[in-house]
Image 1 (spheres, rainbow, N blue to C red):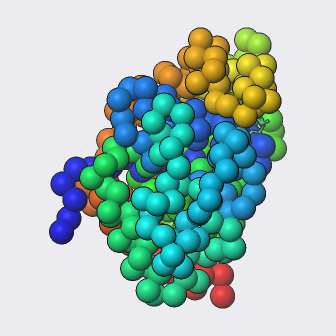
Image 2: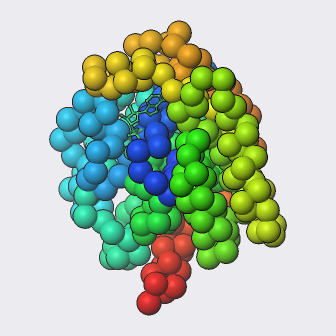
Length: 279
Ligand SMILES: Nc1ncnc2c1ncn2[C@@H]1O[C@H](COP(=O)(O)OP(=O)(O)O)[C@@H](O)[C@H]1O
Ligand SMILES: [Mg+2]
């Protein structure tokens, strides 16, 4: 039976590593939880340094255990800061379409079973152009691209937007400018990105906001905690709260990932397509 309420699915991605995706995913999840949303943070980093290492979680089980039928998704979910639920990364799943059909069905069912208990699903992806990241990104309702104020970050973000729009029919992106220094403006970075992609048709790219470069993020990482939790008054934490407020109002399209079963079906459909394209 279809679930009754709609869920906001936001995939956080970038073409380059080290721009702050995991930082944004963790802190945006906490900021949304502080607004009263029930948040599931899905770590799609596949064994690389992801949410679990940032928050010093030592998960006993991962999505792998769900896919292989040993555990239910509820048993795998770890409780994180401010009530955020976290699905730890599975290692060794390159493309979702490589999963046997029985696991596809299991994945759809596992997520659908959680649908009544969450309002937002935040997905922290590995960098850019790898198969699974694209599978998740192209199935999400909102694609949040993290960029920094560096020429190479802007250029690679425009390449990623082009790839996702042309090959995977993603038509809407939100851009978050991270590690903004001094009096620089994140909006100017967004404008540079817009200039570099202005000839892609039927693609909307919105400004989601910016986060300053902030030593308190570095401090919180050393403590293996989230800045939103330990330094909620830090400039970065306040910016993240503002972004969460905006994200909370982003529209959810019912026929896309607003229903979790469609989200899972989209992952599988898209990833099958991705592999066909890769052949
Ligand atoms: N706004 C910021 N100010 C200062 N340091 C930051 C900021 N955002 C991220 N970092 C730091 O940059 C590093 C990379 O961030 P991370 O979130 O792991 O990036 P990604 O997931 O894109 O690889 C981490 O050490 C993180 O603490
Ligand atoms: Mg990361």
